[in-house]
Length: 111
Image (cartoon, rainbow, N blue to C red; front, top):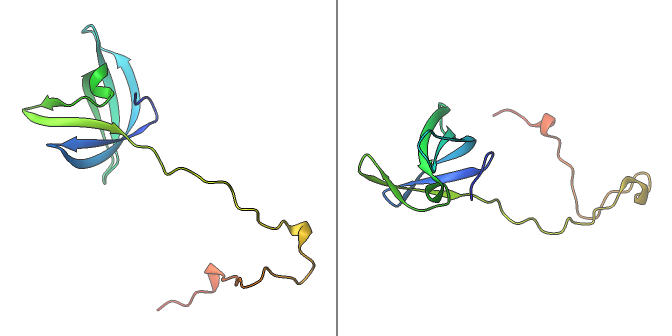
């Protein structure tokens, strides 16, 4: 189930439409319904308050003003094992890792 702080992808008529972050979920006065506060991640940032059932928050499709809507929780890419990089103590003074070049972002020439 998507919960507070999760990023979700909103599908409109079965097409990905926009991303949003769930800011808050609270009970609505109607039994088994919830007020879901969304921060729509587009410019300009917009907040929306949708009143939804739990199954809709869990990804079941529903209609809004006659349009098919679905919410899908977004997960980031799986992180692999961190690479074993040499620490400062392992390098002798003046040594640089083989075949690596350090480029300063501050020395860029403007075009």
